[in-house]
Length: 586
Image (cartoon, rainbow, N blue to C red; front, top):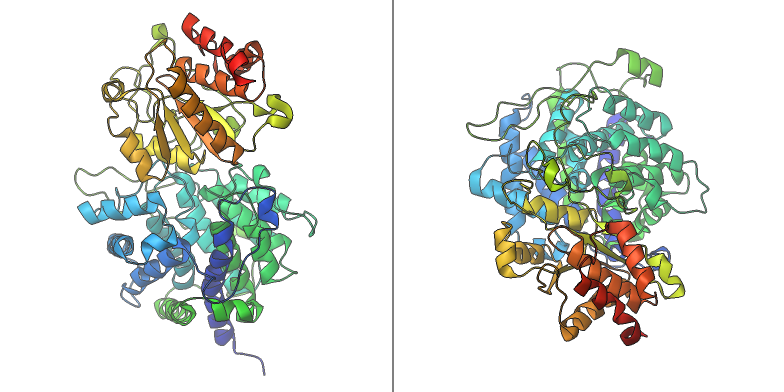
C-alpha cells in the first residue's frame, strides 16, 4: 500500500531534519582533519560516540522560534526576527551549547541581541561563515514562496548579515523545500536556484557562482572526491557559499549511491566537514524520505524522537498557514521547466521593515551589481578569490592617502602566504603568512573593525597562531589594546614577540617564536605573523623561518620580498638578522 501524498510529504519533511542531524554527527570527528588523512579517518556511528554539533542544536532553537509564530497568520517580519533573536539568546546560554563547538559569529550575534533586542543590527555584516545556511531546515519545512525568502533572510541576519550568508540561507531553504515537494534533487532544480540568485535573490553576494561550480563538480566520477579548492571561494566550506556549493555537489553526484555515501563524501573534505555533510544530508533526506536514512545511524542519533516530532510539527504548521491562502509552491503541481520558471515566475523578495531609530539599516532589497557606481555594501572584493594564493593588496603610499579611511568591509584584511614549496622535501604541510594589524585605527588611513578582521582570519584563513611583533603601547596607539583578548576568545593562540620598528628580536626570544611557528606549520596548521603594516618586522621573522627550513639567507629574503613587498626585512639590522641565521640553523 502506497502512502498518501500528505503522508509522503510529512515523511520527507521528517527525513530532511533527521538527515541534517545525521550528516552533522557523521562530519563532527572529521572537522579540522587535514588531507590526506580526512579521506580515510574512521568515524564511529554507534550510540555514545555519534553526536551532533551546533548545526543541529541551532536548528532546534530556530524550529522553536518558527513554532512561536501564530498559525494561519501572515509572517510578521519584526515579530519573527525578535523570536529568532530570543531563541538564539537561549541557545547561547543553554548548558549543552559549549559541548557542541558553537561558532563565534553565532554566539556573538545571539549575545548582541540579548543585550539590545534589535535583530536588525545583532548580526555581523562582515561574516559570511556558514552558520546561517547550516540551520535553515525549519524554514524550509514551515514556509513557502515570499515568506520562505523573508524568513530565511531574517534568520540569517540575526547572526550573519553578510550578503553571501543571506543568499546561501535563502537558496538552501528553497532547495530543501523544492526537493521535498518534488521528491527529487537534480541539476534542473539547482539551475532554477541559480536563476533566482541572479534575479530576485541577488543581494550582492556570490552564491550563484558556487552553485554553478556545484553543477560542474556533480559531473565527476563517483569514485572521486569533492575538490575543495575548486568550489568558490576555495575555503572548504567554512564560508556560506562554499558550504552550500559543496553540499549540493555531493547530493547531486552521489544521489544514486544513497544517503550514507552522500554524507561520507560531503564530510571527507579538508574544511567544515560537519556543516557540509549536514546540508547534504538535509537535501538528500528531503528528496528521498526516511527509508533512505541508515537505520543503525538513526538508532545512535541523540534526540532523534525530538527532532522527528519537531519536523512533523513544522510541516503541519506550514500546512495550516497555506490552507485557503494563495497558490501552492512550485512543485506542488507539475514542476515547470527551467525555461518556464525563468520566464514566468514572479519575484518573491519582500522589503524588510524599517530599522529601529538609531539602528543601522539592513538592506531590504537586493543590492545592485552595476559596475562603475559605489561599491556594493558588504560585498567581498574580487581579489578575495585569489587571496589564498598569496595575492597582495598594497597599502597606499603616504602621498596617496585615500579620500576616506580604509575599513574592514571595503578593504578586507589580507594575509600574504609564504611559498613554502621552495623548501622542497622539508616543506611543512601547513602555512605561514604575514598580515597587518587587525582592527587598526589611526584616524587617517585606517578605520578598521577588530571583530570583523579577526573573524576573517579565523573563518577564511583558518588562523591557529598569531605572532604579534608589537608591544602593548603600540597596540593601544593603533586602537586595539584588546587584540590579544579578542583573538584568544576566538580560540586563536597568540604569542607576543615585541620588536621595535627596524629592530630585531633577542636571540632566545626569536628562537622560541620560530620554534612555535614551525611546529604549527609542520602540524598542518596555520601561523600568521602580525606587524604594523605586515612587512618590515614580520618579513624578517618570515625569512628566518625559511632559512630554518633549509633555504639560503639570500634566497629566503628574495622569496619573502617577492611575496610581501620590498619593505620586508628592510633595515640593516633585520637583514643582518636573517643573514646570521644560516650558520645557526643548519
